[in-house]
Image (cartoon, rainbow, N blue to C red; front, top):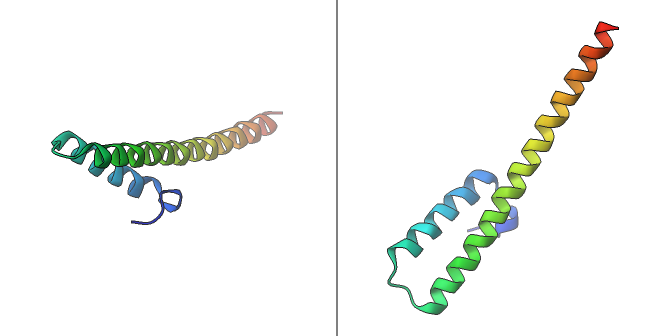
Length: 74
């Protein structure tokens, strides 16, 4: 697996789903469970970063479209 900070949204989401699956299956030792939990937290943060970036891009396009429409109406 690539470093978490290099993963795109889909890859991070898929890795996070796998971490959750392993944790829910149980049977892991404490150290392994904690390591997986930490990885899951990092993956969740990466997903949120990717989503926040997408929201910002969409908002920028919407703002530009609204500004353009307002200028056209003048």
